[in-house]
Length: 575
DNA sequence: GCCGTTTTCGGCCCGACTGTTTTCAGTCG
Image 1 (cartoon, rainbow, N blue to C red):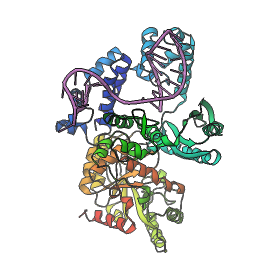
Image 2: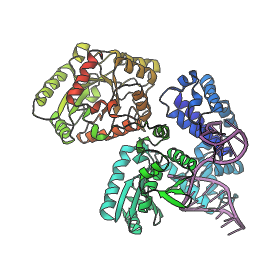
Image 3: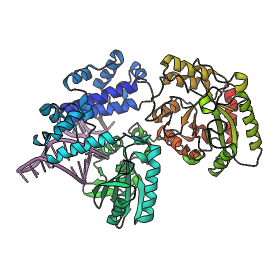
Image 4: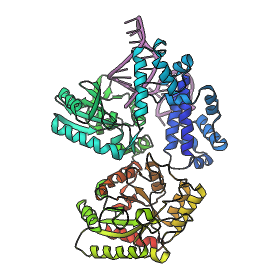
């Protein structure tokens, strides 16, 4: 997929144009184009061949031409020119909180600042405060910004921040006079990584609520304190913004602070066309508030149905809402099974009994116990004898009168040469075979892709686990050609996993949507090694929802009997 | 640079906050 590369060139072009002080709307056009292309579920190359680039929202004649240029030359002449005029290192300076393009430009032109180190130096020698438009305060703020930038680890996985946010909400509910309270921002949209925590509240006594917020043990530093807005930095190093609004503005504020920014812009543009104005306080016709108490009202005012937060990324949801074709998203309550857990047999910590008990408590119909295969020694991969021992143990457990059943599965390694880690006569005895790459991450795209292809071709394989191999903040995806993988999965009727472990989330939202559009079955697996993490299923559901999936797209919505039938159908060649 | 059953030119989302300023630019979300 060239999409990501093109999006990146447009994004950087936009940033460079910003520093140059170009027309802000031209800059926005590049930013929007970058976003549109990154979210595409088809190869931009295919669209280009079909001459359909200009059909994309925000892509006109000029940008279409520029996409073609990148596709044929690998780069963009405008971008190359800009790089000569504006040092790329300035893009890094934009990362400093409090520094925007205008200030960066002045710093570069007047003081030759082109790196963080240089910036720190000119602040400390007080050269900055003497610049026009700058002052002592600005100088101090920049130094503070540099410190923050050095400390911050960037965006954090949702799975690290969501539990923290939920804990804070529950504490505030107990200890302060809140009426309504909700997490907003990218956490509410269930983005895979988040930057801060946004909490929205209504209360008869806002000041009291804000005091309680500032007093939380989790708070390291109060950044700003007011009756409607308080910002704090938590001990974990993450910023939290808490806002209190009036009940009649609840819906408008929730929509506003949930974002995304791009989504909000589109909704407000629709409002403008209808002669309305939307802000965080409500929907206004002239001076008069006509909606805002509930989110539904805000959308209805501009002629839209309610759009679930997970879709609010300006990735076509506005158009779908306008044409009445929003998906009926899969819900956590639809999920009846977990497609991937590890037991004590390999590197998991739970016994089969413990897994069953936990699954029962979650109301699941089935759990596929997929331990590692023999080669993966570090993870306690099962020899063939151990594998069959486990098979018998599962059969014994399944004879018990429980509504929950275990499925005899295996996460079988796709070896470096593309062969599978058990011979076919063993594979065919395993109820659910999910194949995975755990070695040779550095191989070329051809090698990795052909390994996955040969796994998909094997008649005993049902699915591919964590199809791209990425681990958030730790490891990039291996060089698999996704288009080719998708085509093969579609052809053979095989499933792809949505790995729900919060550092994987693999497939991610965009890839999930691409797979869904090709009609590829998707299976959510927690890949858990610890029993409590069966609850991580909801992260997988979040990815599915962000990938526009409906109930029918997700194998986990089948009950035990139905899922078993699907497994058998795959073995029969999918007729 | 995009876009148009009101427009092919003249618009383009909105408000809060901060700091440097005598009325506003820059940054942020």
